[in-house]
Amino acid sequence: MKKLKFKNGDTMDAIGLGTWKSEKGKVTEAVKIALNNGYKHIDCAATYGNEAEVGEAFSEVFKKGDVKREDIWVTSKLWNNAHKKEDVIPALKQTLKDLQLDYLDLYLMHWPVAFKPDVGFPEKAEDFLSLEEVPLIETWNEMVKAKEQGLVKHIGVSNFSIPTLESLMKDTDYIPEMNQVELHPYLQQNKLLEFCSKNGINVTAYSPLGSGDRPDEMKAADEKSLLENPVIVKIAKKHGASAGQILIKWSEQRGTAVIPKSTNEERIKQNLMSAGYQLDEDDMKEIADLDYHFRYVNGKFFELEGNSYENIYDD
Image 1 (cartoon, rainbow, N blue to C red):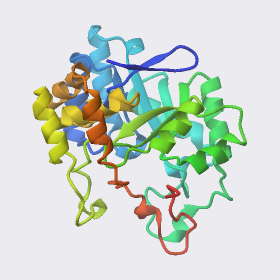
Image 2 (image 1 turned 90 degrees about the vertical axis):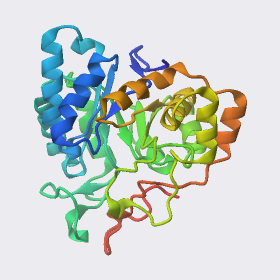
Image 3 (image 1 turned 180 degrees about the vertical axis):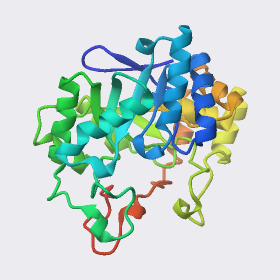
């Protein structure tokens, strides 16, 4: 399996287990299955509402001793209601408590969007804080402090476009080490990947299989399935793989990390086995032709009348 390398020499396995949408009653077992079957990269977030259950899995597995904490890469994310400078490190400490860890390997600013501290998810424009009230650099500087305090080893961002990255980078010498974004054959983000590569920013792909299990209100009536795409299905058959494995391998082969979510034991194992395949030049060319800039997570849930968060992706 490919590994992503950081400036200090640390490495992260390209294929990890995602935990977005993993139910509380299933995620503990899913993480245990993953760790006991060779996964060394687990992706979490406070807003997923299941970090305490993920923490139970970490505690159980690490106590047995077969898997050590220092061998596992754990990522989590700062939610939008903790962007004010006095809230960043307390939110991080709550995540560490829930995950039963002393440090994170990577901490990301989940979105370039800020909510008022008592808002879990906004229902009206007044629930937001503007980026004039809470500039991204204010939040970022606190994440830098968290790294300096040893609470996290690396820091980065998620859902940041090129203009948003540029806006942040002009105000700091500490360039984000990661940008986690939606990435799959229907949304290949070549310009963003090129920008991140030039600036030493690693990239993680989320929703690599099309996020078919996300809430119905997030789905478009006419959206296309990645797993049923004829080109992907044909390439999968050619390699004796599943469509999901081809999609995961595509991300890994492009040099990004990829975090497919599953709570099914066999699929968890199969997803990790994706690293064993190799797509040839013809496969990659065919998949390159599938890009039509379609987002499964379109960010429209932040666009409430009267607020300033329109078109956060700068599309």
